[in-house]
Image 1 (spheres, rainbow, N blue to C red):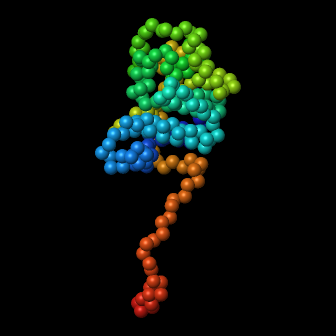
Image 2 (cartoon, rainbow, N blue to C red; image 1 turned 45 degrees about the horizontal axis):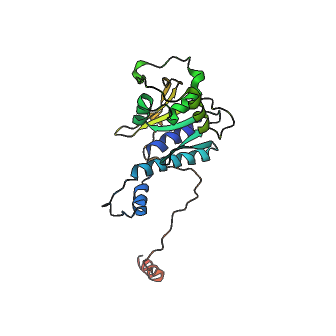
Image 3 (tube, rainbow, N blue to C red; image 1 turned 180 degrees about the horizontal axis):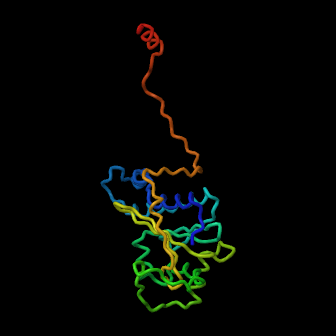
Length: 234
């Protein structure tokens, strides 16, 4: 179900799991809380912004298209388009499960699952991964939901061939899994990519061209004295 090169998959997986160690001190400096005694209400959002923007860098590295999903005034997400016109979206596993089970019908993930309607004849995968959907009265017509779904991917010339979800869990043992849902939001395909997680993973997106700043030494060295001393040691 996934048609991505191994190096792209690896970058996706490790971008989801590994945080930028410089993010927290930079955020604290930006909100005037360097000593950490104040409030940091924006920390979670900043982590997601960093994660999304890092995924955009991955897309640019491999010359893949990407789009921004606007959800009101407070939240923006991204999707990446594969070479086969598949769309890839990214979620925390706990949030994903909550959206599938109880999320509103006009949540962008459920709207995107509309483009997997050609997969509705696939049998849902084993009971272990069945997520017990809760039926709810839908205030939107099918046509209205379809129009909202098309609005999300309006930057694409053609409909996506399918929508794939990457879900990660950060804990003592982190995991990354990929899912494909049908238009009824039932999982019909799953693959575990946890084995691609690297410890001490270093991002090299070759797009920043940043050189480490070199600081001049504050210690004055008398080279003549060093030479004299070396001559005496014989």
